[in-house]
Amino acid sequence: IRETVLSHIVLKHIQAVTGYILRHEAHFRAVMEEQLRLESSEQIRIRRKRLERNENRIAELKRLFIRIYEDNACGRLTYETEQKQLETECGTLRQEIEVQERQNENVEKFIQTAHKYVGIDKLDGYALRELVSAIYVDAPDKSSGKRVQHIHIQYDGLGFIPLNELMKEETA
Image 1 (cartoon, rainbow, N blue to C red):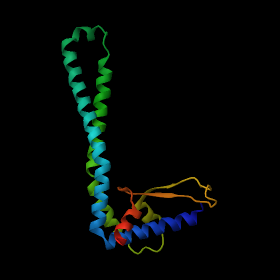
Image 2 (cartoon, helix red, strand yellow; image 1 turned 120 degrees about the vertical axis):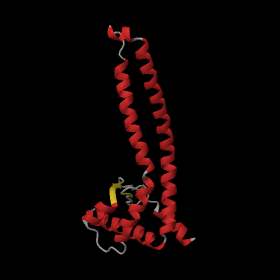
Image 3 (cartoon, rainbow, N blue to C red; image 1 turned 30 degrees about the horizontal axis):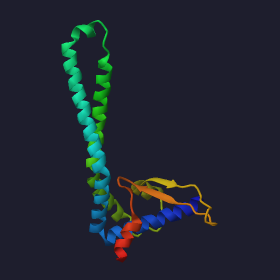
Image 4 (spheres, rainbow, N blue to C red; image 1 turned 90 degrees about the vertical axis):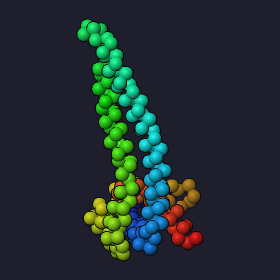
């Protein structure tokens, strides 16, 4: 895909998103919070369960250490490696849970940033860096006889914005 075409498509998408936010900020906020809540609640649940399991195993390892100190002194047990690995993983899981829980703040931050770019007519690097975290371009598909190439835009802090779903609500 040519850079000019990609730039034009991304600009049109950003214009549509920022325009929609300007017209329907409350609805956008509700839709994005619901989307993020659904995505993150399952991930948080899984991570909390794993965190609890790891913390229980760490406590069990500590109890084992107290009971079998003599065996450890002889070098027959190697559970300290597992304990350190679990403690490291617990720290990582706590951070991931905290990030998931802060996503509602990301919606508000994105809305404020989007207000700065309402009516943007040219895409520059600064706007792109502030609004977009990644652009994914699919391989071209020629199965229908025409060359079709899908582009997915991941917005900073929000992920993929379901613009087609938002526009359905606007026309309904």
